[in-house]
Length: 111
Image (cartoon, rainbow, N blue to C red):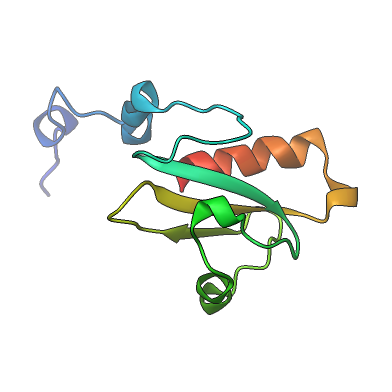
């Protein structure tokens, strides 16, 4: 029977938390009018709300992806002429809590 030495299988520079590498580049801000010049912009929408006109996303595009604004639901629209647009659902406005907002913000960052 052959045994394996983990030191020989796993390189010394192996990063066991690769998702943490991008955190230094992530900037999260809450603004009324986002700068639409590059990167990604996330819009948080309550259930049934239309995407803001400023997002440049049409109702047809949202409908084609089946986005309804449910809690944590995301829809991403890749753009070549501006930032990627991310829609993130908040669920029903009357049911919004700080815990839901925290989780939705995390979904937006991951999207």
